Length: 91
Image (tube, rainbow, N blue to C red; front, side, top):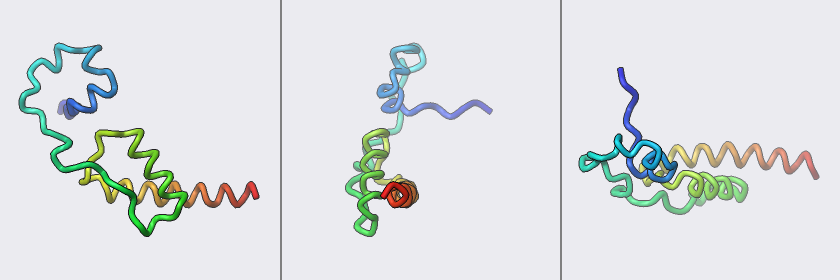
């Protein structure tokens, strides 16, 4: 079974289209990742540490959209807990 295709927006951001332009010549049927809307602001129930993690994830992976909010929320929550525990150890 072949690997799934890399979305065009992600390939452009990572530079994959410049390394292998022949693979992206016929991209007229690529799904529009931005069609669902941006990922948006962090949830209100997240701590300050988790909100910082949310911003880092959203900035690092700009191809994420509103359908990824739950996954990013869980990731930010866990990263926030690690950061909070770590900052408590330093104090």
